[in-house]
Length: 275
Length: 303
Image (tube, rainbow over all chains, first blue to last red; front, side):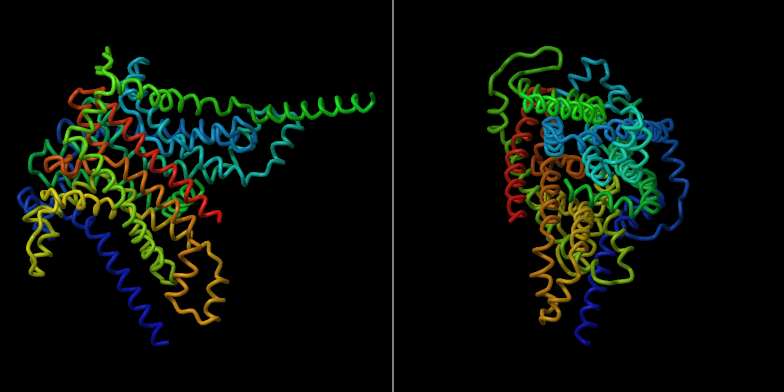
């Protein structure tokens, strides 16, 4: 018994250490975002002397409300990419799982390769230019969709395995067209995995920095990640505003996490293990 | 004769059934996803092999053979990135693997606070990489940062985390581990929780202690989870760009340049052919490392 208590104490101590290590940077971010300019530039891990909640307002106003434009762009990008992803990948996952032929085998291996191979950046820009989509929101949406297709199809495909075939066969015998079968019978049954996919893809696309950096340059098109990155050089030494911006960008993720924490964690681990 | 007739009818019936079946599962369902993926991913991948052999400005190109690759491997500023990428990927992958295993073990014990702690460890995964980079750059500031303040209060000499050419890559790797260990932990945790309790009970009856139970039950039976963590973390490490770019921009000098950051630098400088060559090198590296490793791990898993 004594041994067991000892183990428990060690457990609790170790976890306390981890909690401190993982929470401290966020507390630091929050304190920094509320300091005045001089206090923030000291980079100390201290409470602000005076709480400057107006930092958040100043960040929004900065550079002609650029952060607001960026939020609008990021939300547009995320929303349309996720809608297209859901529409394309649920249908693709459905047939790829159900068919047992060379087509589904090829599609499977192509999509698995997509999880490993890096994006070929300049050739993609070249193709976007040929299609007159470079530096446009539509082009960026298509790129975000493409990059997230492998992961999304994989999740849909593995979930399809748990949907009974008899439903489709019954619908077919009753004279339901393939398209109607999918829309009215299969798609509603995919709802749990669709929810997971909406959340995971929203997080990935909203947080994406590299792809907008390459495929959507220009100050009119900035996304939130790019404004934060540009802020590093533009703001001179206003660490308080920099961290206020960082907090503003983190808040949507935090809210999402508070509500969907179990769904996110389950989705991430399921997707990883099955792939 | 009748037999043949019967066979023909049977074959026709089977064919009819198959056609109907393929009718429900029409290939058209997969066409939107596959065509997007082909146009914006597969085609660029093949084009990149061609343009990596050229000097190129997106409008016109001149063929230059393997010059881009030669330049990449002879120029110090670029060939250093190959070594850095491998070191970075190896360090982040192995530390994440080990650390996440211990955190997952701690979290799988019956603690009341375990859900909150799991959330705390996982949350950094969802935070913007740029925000994390900025925060840790401030914490690692050579004179004012929290890291050095702690070191000094313990009576040690302060360290220039991001300014020291030997240390900078590892400081960024540390941040990467901090941000990414959560996802590995969650994967391990779901692997560990799927192990049947019966094994542990049998082991307790046989007199196995806590450490023995972990070494001989948890470690071998969480192998599938471990394999996916290795593959995922390795791919992530080999591709990593945004954290390094925010924290050091490849500096000091070229000390933290990785393949992805060289690709970006050459792109920004307008050397598009060279940048594409970097892309091809990254492609070859990732496939040459990950695919055999994946095959090996799956083979071991099946044994």
